[in-house]
Length: 191
Image 1 (cartoon, rainbow, N blue to C red):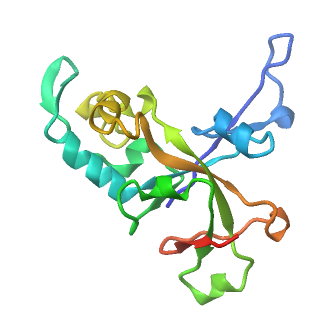
Image 2 (cartoon, rainbow, N blue to C red):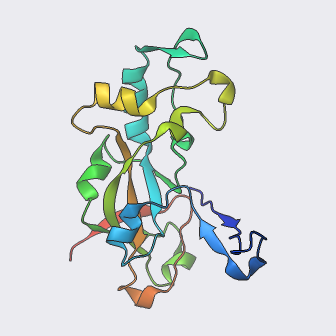
């Protein structure tokens, strides 16, 4: 599991850069789904199911695509290609889509973390894939793969979607943060 984000500077109206006073944290997954499902906020967290990626890889492996002007079979896909904040495992392929509209809670793997308030996420939408995931950030030498096209071709029931967007459940625990550690699990909360 990993988290990423970077600081962006806004330009003043006179064209000069402002200082860090006008900071805004930007995430790869800032989308309208965050605005629509998070009371106007854009802070979404992107979750990828490793089993879905493995299943997609098996189907794509038989596909030949034009990659960097040569025909090359699609390589095994890494979940990191999809720029997730969190990678989950132990969920059936495409099972993350069944969680949309539900609340999940982090079940800590250690006793120390259990003493803090539980961290809950609302699963708000599927994540549409764009051309940005066509290049593997760990292996850019493999060339470009048209992931949205292949998803739509081989998985028409899902279209160009892979992964889900979640938001922190601010109503639970007063919006205070929580801890998420490698090895933690999730459970669906009965509301």
